[in-house]
Length: 583
Image (cartoon, rainbow, N blue to C red; front, side, top):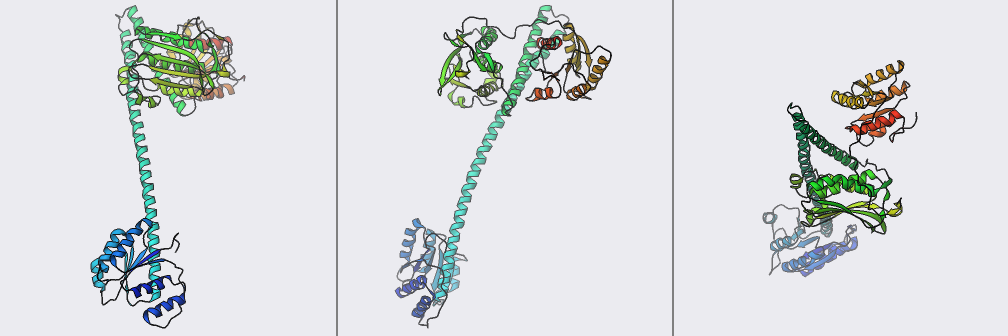
């Protein structure tokens, strides 16, 4: 046997001499002892038999009730492997009743009925117990080796049964665990699907709302009765809603880059004080329109310049302050700036404190997850897609900082942006007071251009828009409807002695795309500046454009002031921030 402890065998017989014989048979160490036991029991000549590698613990009882009590006591310590049970045991329970009671205590107990066939015929036994693999019949008088072999086989069977039961329980446990894991995964997937469906519904609303305004007011502009004042208001409305749509697109792109780990930050010496003032100045009209006070609260001296990505800091603060204004009906929004120590490190803490509706505690843990808002009615009441806070926190982590929140329903909220200071402080400390709080949204005067520009663009509306902007600024513009036309026009102008001073190259065009057209121009010896002007705005698109031969990169839609500034730089020969290495 291979069990850790010897198997236990129970023998139930009212004849003490028979019990003693069982003991000698089952515990005999060698073949000669088996022969001697047989001779003693059946008055035969001892015979030499081979030894069986089997040493069980044998327990002897003389009555059925004793057997039942013994099995009940042994259940807690592993029980018995098998039992030899006599049929006739007066005056107590007979073998039938004893076996039935034993199986109620241990259903896997292996039983051998040891009885004279004339006492209990097999037909009676099978009628009582049916056909079962737990029961064997051993007719008295029996051979000692036969009894010992039967005991060994049934003990081995019981050991295998226990191993099988153990494996079954282990498998059931593993199945239950995997079932629970699958159930959890299903719940997570269902929650994610529900969140995304909610996001799509919100996004549809957010897109259709400004589109309604854009399309509606564009139609009103066609009305001959529209006055100059109404026309200006309509144009401002179209512009405002177009900016909202662009912000939606930028948020989705930023989220996709962040989730793919492809969004990069540009650590530069940044005037954080100016960034804060710009954000406050930009959102001041919105706060004023709601009757809210919006201001900056900062102590006497704070670091003005940090090594960080100013554009991303501005993006985070625009979201935090914009949310505070959105969810505050009355009172004030304060941008409070301090220096904080977190785990021994110095951080510049920009806290946005509002007196708004607050957030329920159970909603705080999921507030920074994508597509999540404070409650299902938030988008209906206040708008938004639920992307801003997720993007803001992830951007803060990329900058080495964090965005935290503290809030109580009805008591307002405080969102805090932490930016690493410490050794990163790159400028002097001086009071934040004073200085203008400007905004980069102020109108930029159109710049006069001088030079010939080739615009490679396949969209008729975009052709008309770009050519109008550039020609009004003084440039001579030639249009090409695809990449092949652009290559031919550039080559023809160079051969005629009137080369273009700048090429604006769309990327996705028929016949030849912008990448292929640029490579052909460079291979043909064209060394003038080429600026990619494309709707390809994913991470890596800029690098590919520069690698394919472009000198600069701008994304659509592009504002007129930015387009003119870009063209003026290249036409004047100034180095552009996107300039590729010299060719």
